[in-house]
Image 1 (cartoon, rainbow, N blue to C red):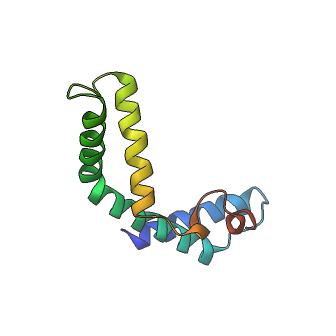
Image 2 (image 1 turned 90 degrees about the vertical axis):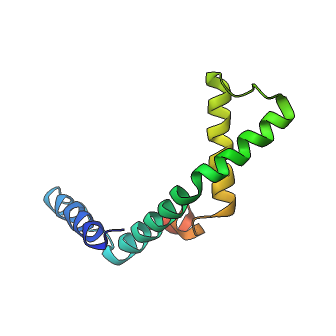
Length: 105
């Protein structure tokens, strides 16, 4: 995770907002959210293949050994893998898009 790149991007966005006369971002809150999200993505990426294999095995036990090769099957595997990753490694509620705290910014 590149903390300097995260801060640079936030400051760039703030400069754009200033140029368009929008209110400035809360740099500290934006930085904390970006760091938490980057950390979550690192954890997610580290465990993605393992969780995906578990999902595929479970579905093939339920639906047969050749299940999952269609576009719909692949979509289902990806959707269930994402759901499992979010269940095992939840992003703190205050950093989830659409949360009440995010809406207040």
